[in-house]
Length: 494
Image (cartoon, rainbow, N blue to C red; front, side):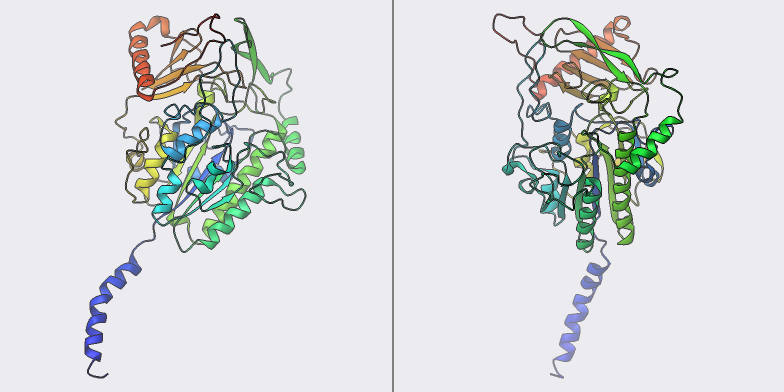
């Protein structure tokens, strides 16, 4: 044994550098992705210091990382944008262009709708799970009609609430959710999701993890904790009286269902809804609890935090709880109020705290960005429509080699929005109506509220941008409106 000792020591000495290198190797970064439902661009303090709502914890993410001022959802409603985040593909490619139970008609029938995220998609969660990450989904899924399309079939090991139905019957237990056991009667859903997410973090703090916390807040039903509702009613009472500063204005023109007649859809123009404000504070508090858990487990410096909304704030229907001004429209509309979102990324060691980027980015960009930040190989055959934002995170003043962003919504929204497509190039945005082919052109730098239509004065720009939009339609095999009957009026086709 004594004679073998030198040989053993020699062997150990040869292994030692590798062991030390393994011990010194940094742990792969964790990812926490906060997706908020129906949150408006102007709802949080980081984007609107005058917001009626109080969001100190959401603002912590902006203070720690990069805030994008032209961050977009791929669609003005929920399921398509969620699809784009998970796949890095534009939802028009699989015809997933409306929320997955949306079949509303209007002057014409809507385009065909594919109402599931196919299992053949190589999702963001699958990419991280293949790399050895623990993966957890919590909250609203709305990406498939039956259990074979739920989160555990799409790369998530843990599913806390994700199922077919979009929203819970109540934000207070009992939830009637097949993937989220009811808590004590009256338990609040945002608190429950935060608590279960924190348990996942604590149990996986020694291995890399992806936590995708997809809040049901601040979607309807409009329900808030009683003490917070009372707090904001008191706060609203200190604001100027509605007769001096009206809460609503007749803003948008919409087709009345089935008739070629124009009506108006009122839009909320003031933030003062006490129940919505209470829901905002509860969501913000839950975000803060998860951020605190990262601190308490010494994980903050090795965790990438993403914050995003799936579409614009609800301003034209279902209680119209928030105002997106100065942005025009809201959820369900192709105007900026429907697609421009709070969009923040904090990547410790890369992003400069409190930095701001004005370059246009979109929800398909998260997939390649997160792969790059985690040191994982890109999947260009999957995330076809996304680009890595790492260059912008390093230098917010740089640009990406991308000419255009595109949108396609061939449906009649529940919120009054018209079927249409849109393209942004530089400061200019063109919207094309799919009922009759009319186009509108806006300079977003000079007119963020899209009040002044420049189409008539810029025919060459309109022709060029419209041509690029139509080329993109063909590239993604976009589908369009259909006649209600063979003998009826035919919708316009590009």
